[in-house]
Length: 354
Image (cartoon, rainbow, N blue to C red; front, side, top):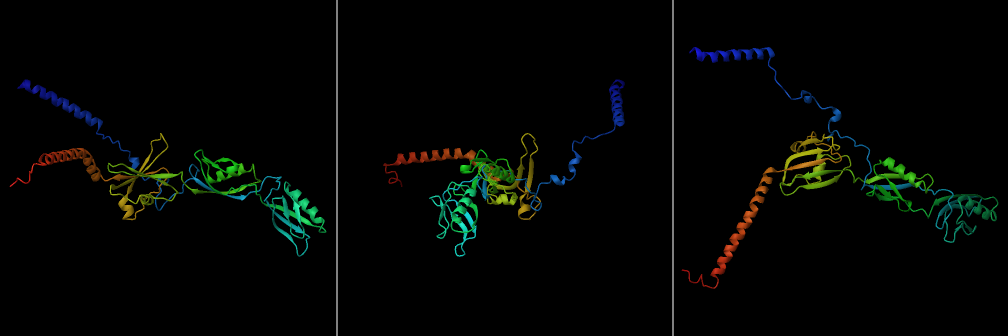
């Protein structure tokens, strides 16, 4: 009995020592959860929603945007020499009362302007505006006492119109036809306007243009509909800055028969940062309940993902697995039926049956 009690006594002493160590050290729990995450998100980090939409940054022109260009001031560089079919605005003081000269006159093919039956024609082709004024003054001085002549170029026939729609090419330029190419990729509308005016300054005196983006084709978001095992569907939608999740869903006609109500936005970050955002969408709340909380504003390059209906996906999966076997059994059954039919043909099989 004494020998049997020795291990028990040692065990008791060891247990008492362990309890003493634990009592001295205290009991501490380990929690890996960061309680700072429980605080509210900073206002500037909140994603924009239906009732708190944000303005997008200044639009940067990229291919294949379409630009609308209007020429507000198109005056050729001096000294401009008149050409056939130019239009001159001529005003003369001191003319006959019944035959004023105050109108627009076209330079005819012969290189002259016709001032009317009372004054005749004056040759002006190849002359500058100052030379045209002196030539008309000399001509009218033979008819009038002291004519005072004013001449302005109203329209140049040799200047091709610039106004129109321009597609930004794959190389980031717009083709202004006879005036050459201008690079506009990566520029805002104001910067592109300044670049075009600077380029046209080679041909015109202080040109002024009006530039607008007619079609916003380069900034888009994507709608991805999972196809329940039958292939996903992708839709590319140009963005104008005012689209929400509901607007995006309307572009694909809402949820399909293969879709579930599991919808979310995958918002990318620059490559290598690893801080992409996943914004879950409460489909029932934003549709039936009219809640704007998860009706987020769509941003360029967003992916609106519509998950599949798992029941339908499972059914399709089983169908793909059993499909080959069903076809094989069908072929086997059809072959056996054909063989039996051929064996009984011509033997009066049915006639001799009772």
